[in-house]
Image (cartoon, rainbow, N blue to C red; front, top):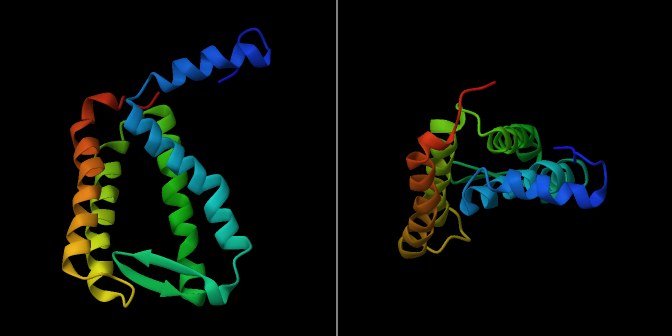
Length: 148
């Protein structure tokens, strides 16, 4: 994504063109994947004490070393999402929607099984909110292109 004229000002049109390749909501998901890949997960993995570490998989919370051991998998998932949204890779469909569906189910399960969860009503509300990007990603098949 280098600017053609080599200046900082020349980067702006390139960035705008890149963002126009996908709808706004997909840019939000891409930005989230970038944040998780380059800021949050590295902090969590390398700086957060093991005693404070938590990872949620399918709605169940892992703590301590179990969380640390599975964190690289979350890192890989977010990095793949960041790359896939950047390139609009064909393999993102259906895998982005499958992962989003897993998060949707996990939101319900977490609310039901974790002591900090709110039960059925908050769980269903959270799942319904995550159903929106899940459905949008499922319906976005035509936006993803063959690998080049």
